[in-house]
Image 1 (cartoon, rainbow, N blue to C red):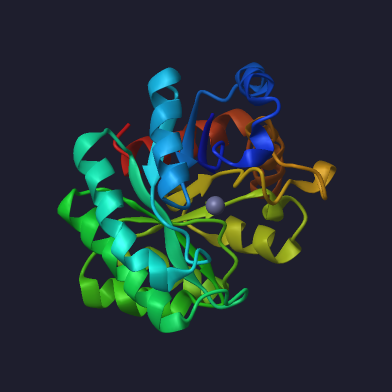
Image 2 (image 1 turned 120 degrees about the vertical axis):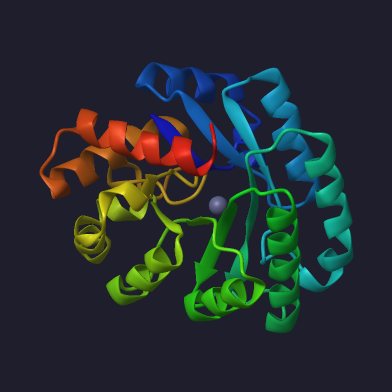
Length: 249
Ligand SMILES: [Zn+2]
């Protein structure tokens, strides 16, 4: 089982990193896409990938990280991409919910990520909160349609637009307790769906309020497979194949 979006570089994993990896292995997690959210954590994701070849690095600057000052830092992200093997660009996107950074700066920062992804033919890990339409608009303008809208929280109608453009949709622990998300996921074409934890955030139903970790992805798999009326094994096969294709694994 592939966890397609996780932040093992988060300080919350410092204390028991090895135990977290061990539990993931025991639960059947075969690979983890490990996304940085600033320069330091992007470098850490690369370093962790060198130590453990099943941790696949993605590099980028999260829109909540003071976008204005970060725009010039994007050169450093490109340096990493040129020098190292990474599987995706992100986490990037737009966040109008927390609104930590001015929207104009967020948009510019997002465009910089798209340029790098396009230049290096890498998929994007896209974060959106109350910003899907603007994100789609920018992606259309930039003419790049490869990646995943991770931890999808939009409507069914928006999901259709996203899929029609050629993107994938990632579902995290929220789908285990949100009826709305469950209803959406069961209506979508299964070959465009990815599963993820977004750990340490957004733990699934049995662990709400706790730190999330990759081993918990099995609970999300079980919950979604029940909602879809198929065996977890079959769903795992499908979503892993989707991830393998999108991230060229
Ligand atoms: Zn994330």
